Amino acid sequence: MAGGAVSNSTYISSTNTETKNSSYLFPFILVTSLFFLWALIHNLSPVLIPHLKKACQLTDLQSSLIDSAVFAAYFLMALPAGAVMRRFGYKTGIIFGLCLYALGAFLFIPAANSREYVFFLGALFVIATGLTFLETAANPYVTVLGSPQTATTRLNLAQSFNGVGAVLGPVIGARFILSGKELTKAQLDAMSPVQLQQYLSTEAGTVKIPYLVIGLVVLLVAVLFVFTKMPDVQETTDEAIDTSKSSGSIFRHKHLIAAIVTQFFYIGAQVGVNAFFIRFAKFSAGVPEKEAANLLGWVAGLGFMTGRFFGTFLMSKVKPQLLLTLYGLINVVLILTAMLCKGTIAIGAVLMVPFFMSIMFPTIFSLGLRGLGKDTKFGSSLLVMSIVGGAICPPLMGLISDASNIQMAYIVPLFCFAVVVWFGTKGYKLDAAASH
Image (cartoon, rainbow, N blue to C red; front, side, top):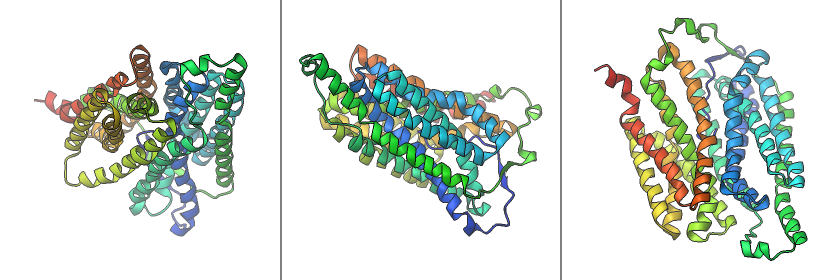
C-alpha cells in the first residue's frame, strides 16, 4: 500500500526451519521484488492522472478516479485475498496475484486503443486486486526466510524497496508516458476533428509499451515463483483468531476507533498530495509535466524514503505520539503555505510534505493497536481496511478543483493532517481519558 506495507496476517511459523538460511537468499530476493512492484504501480498513478486527463479529456474529478479504482480494489478484495491464502497457501496466492497484475497491465493496450477511460479504470482495478494478494503474502514470507532473530531487519530491508518504487515510478512515467505536449484549450479547439483524434490517440498510446514491459516483467517473476522452492507459511494454532475469547465488542477501544478514522484521512492525504502534484506544479508555478514528474520522484519520493529511516531513528529518542503530532503540524503549515503562495515556494512546500508523511502510517497503526490484547488481529484488519480513504479523498480534491482550482483543492489534505495532529495529541489516549 501507499503508506508502506503493514500486514494484517496472523503470526506465522516455518516448517522448514532446518534449512540453512543461505538457501533462502533467492526466495528472499523474489519476495523483496514484490515490494518494489506494488510501489511502482502506486507511484505511476500521479503520472497517469494528468496524462489520462489529457488523453481522455477528463475533468479533475474524473481523473481522480484512477486512485479510487486502486484503493477500492484493496478495500473490496482484502478479505477474499486472505481467504484464498488460507485455503491454497501463500505461494499460490502470490502467483495468482502476479498473474492478475500482469493481466491488468496488458489490458492497458486495448484500453489505449479504445481511449475509453472506463477500460483504464478496469485495468487498474485488476492490477490492484493482484496487488492485494501480493501485499497479503509478502510480509509473512519475509519473516520466515531466515532466522527469527533477524526477521524485523529483513522486513525493514524489504520495505525499503517501497521507497525505491516511490522514486522510480514518477521518473519512469516522465520518461516513457508523458509526452511533454501540453496544448491549451485554444490550441485544441483550433485543430480539425481528424487532427484532434490523432493527437489524443497518440497521447493515449504512450502507455502501451511501458505497461507491456511491466506486464512481461511481472509474468517473469511469476514464473520464477513457480519454479522456486518456497518455505511453508502457516498460522500457529494458538495464535489463530478466536473472537469467542474477546471480552466485548472491539469498538469499546475508543483509541482504536480514533486510529481507524485517522488512518482513513492520512491515506487520503498521502494519495491526494501526490496524485495532483503535476497539475498543482503547472497551475502554481508553470512547471512542465515532465519536470514536475521528475521532481515528484527525485525530491518527494526520495524524501519519503529517507524520512522513514530518519523518523525511525528519532523514535528511539522521542515518543511516537509526539513525533506524529510534530510532523502533522509541520505538514499543516506546509500545505497552508502551498495553498497561499505561488511559484517555487508553493512547489517546495508540497515537495517537503512526503518527508514528514513517512512515519505516519506505521505510527498511527502501532498506536491504534496498543493494549488491544486478543483484539489485536481484528483491530489490525480494520486499520488495513481504512486505506479506503485513498479512494475517497482524491475525488473530493477533484471536485473542489473543478469548482475553483487545484491549489484550493489542497484544503482536503490540510484537513486530513489536522486530524493526524488531533490523534497525536488526544485521539491515541481516548481510552485512558475515559477511565478518569
